Length: 328
Image (cartoon, rainbow, N blue to C red; front, top):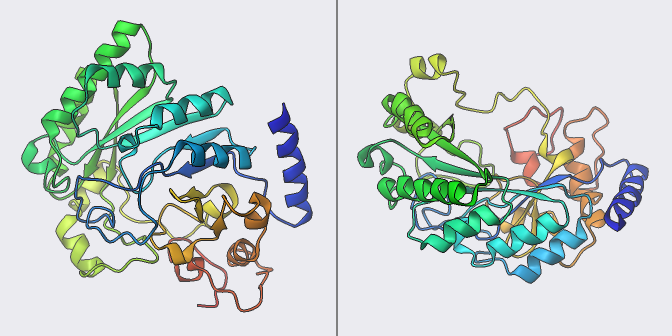
């Protein structure tokens, strides 16, 4: 009840400042470390320029208390969430405040049976497991240090734990990252998910052309030529390979990312700490959400374009969404 009243107050103040209501969904990164070594991921090639490490449970609680509007949390971003030993405490804490939580994982690690029981009993809403193929050869073309057999074994253990405890949560999703190497694995991946009784989805492998503050050593065209599936496959399976660049950015008015150190990032594509919009641990959420960086960035997508002095943000450089004007 206190959170609801506080949310109404904060949203009223935000409205007076001409800002959107506070987000109901945000992304919190509990750990931006990962061992899988994906070649198109800044974490995988050890070039992420955010403060790296594991978020403490105390930090997580402070974040939750500072954002009373929260109803949903995506508990992942640039790392493997299950490397955080407090992740189940985080999920349970959020659940007590009626906040649902979802996790994305490579699921390529060895755990004892208690781990899978903990997942089922944690009130986690969904678990999405991403694979890059249905054979170790195709899978490891992208998940360089991963073990597909271990991933499948872990999903089966989780399903067994669900049946043993007579529970359906979390909702388990198997996502196939479709690339030039895995484009012939779609049917097999769909059957794999069906056989395990879980949800199947697929997404075209992201070649990093949407990262506004990261430069790869190979051009976008070179990465597309090497990684992307054939056009006929994309058309048949209705896969998109890039942002269509015709809509305004949805992130700036509906969500944001909190890094392990409390830094607020405008979206999940920002990889450099110099482009943060503030820090939730040291600043009031309204000071950030209604601050000059946000006002300027939102203004890039409106006819009014509320300029704030000489401010330039990472949003000026980003080409993922259609801007009306930009200073960059």
